[in-house]
Image (tube, rainbow, N blue to C red):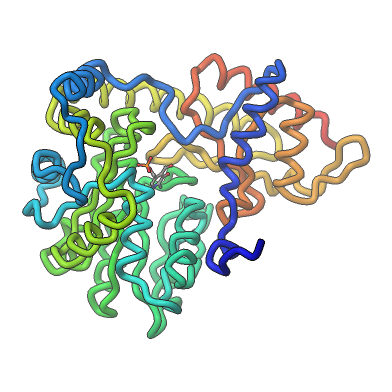
Length: 397
Ligand SMILES: Cc1ncc(COP(=O)(O)O)c(C=O)c1O
């Protein structure tokens, strides 16, 4: 059957492919250590689960307004005020089926065919596809390992054309864990104002920032910048609620209204029960968030130390998220049983089949030579996986 050109331009997710392969091996009884997880390994806090159970018992089981309930929008307004010092009206908020859906929607409402979306690279796998699905064009701008993958503002400036519609900033970043410096975010904001670009600020890892640092939202720079920014966030990572599928946006009312309109003809609304649970997540006790952050910070320290002790591996200590993105450049070209490892796809294959560990090769994030290791796994598993990696690398010639 001939399918649409639109769908044939979309690449399946590498991260999901690796996770699926690792899961399959596990189901066959193979003891694989997965490093592909894009979700916290903690359970959703009990108070949030209770709110969902109560919602079911109270009969909150019907359609809601397409762009989300007024109650949850109000909770999001309060969150922005409390945590970011940002003032919004509920008419500027939309509730979506996960932050992924939020960004998909944003691209649908702001991009026309041929419009360009600037994406700092290495990038989260879905950004280019959001542009493709809106018949726009992803434009990648490299960031360097040497600068801790911080934004390269000069390169971004050079990438701007008269077709550029928007730029994505994702801090803390997936896949690098980089927290962009305030100075460079300010420079990007200035550029966006000067060139009339929309900033899509994906802040889904906001709460996972370490070393006592505070998250900095680009929308807080000035009122002018706030007007140009669509802030994206959600409950998935902060409250360990990936399966509940709630994300949200804050923007000028025109964009919010357009997103609700699109949603009214696609998903109708995010799940009523998950919306009730998200009100509790945003307004209820916040201690669990700090606990998770503390655990992640311990694991980050451990995994970075182990990686940097291995010959041929170098790894920055990233400021946020739950990923590390070490370079394996010095390992490329080595062989195992006379099979040369030409790239990190070959290395990932070797590590999965021979060493039974599953990191995600950098190719999927536009960064061959690197591998993403998620530390959203127990310290025991991380230890076992690092032992296997060390042994596996030692066997290469
Ligand atoms: C950078 C980034 N943005 C957005 C998302 C989507 O999160 P959600 O589960 O809310 O759709 C993810 C999930 O992996 C992510 O890594």
